[in-house]
Length: 214
Image (cartoon, rainbow, N blue to C red; front, side, top):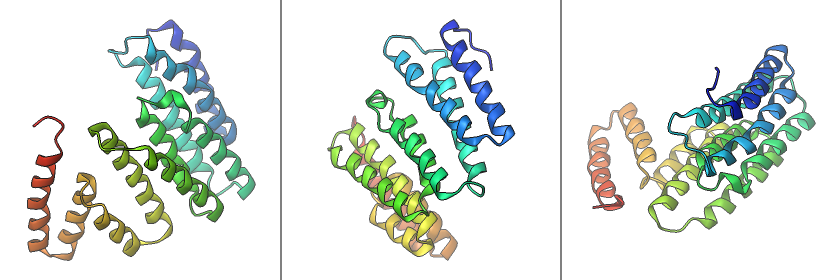
């Protein structure tokens, strides 16, 4: 991947190094190198036109590298090493420069959910998600934020608590379209077509009411 932006060349070279670290099994170095890239690059969006997507491509490259490094490393790292990576990723995710660019924040937090089988790390993660949730209000953008947080909470439940707990959480959040789609898939699997149809009809009404411009 080569950018036409000279300002991004340093970031790209760093991510190439991070990619090499993943291949060598130097996962912590790969994660830390990728995290170093993200703050200056996301801050460029405040003053640069990213209509060609170069900045976004670099940010996505960084999160993909972190994701792969973490997934690959899980069977090999001890609890202390996992906590160190969790803390580094979460520290970046909560920084203020992701306000307005929260998809990358949630990409990073989703990576943190891989560590949720650890009781202590799950507790820290859930506390942070609740903190984000408490800031959301009722505007359309805040509803989007709330949905992303709820999806991350579902990730944790699916990883740690099993299918029954996940299904319960899905139905508790059925007003969000992604959760309704998951519920429809559940009823399809159960062969309950009547309930599946009712979920579809209910969803049309909810979506109609929640459109920002109607």
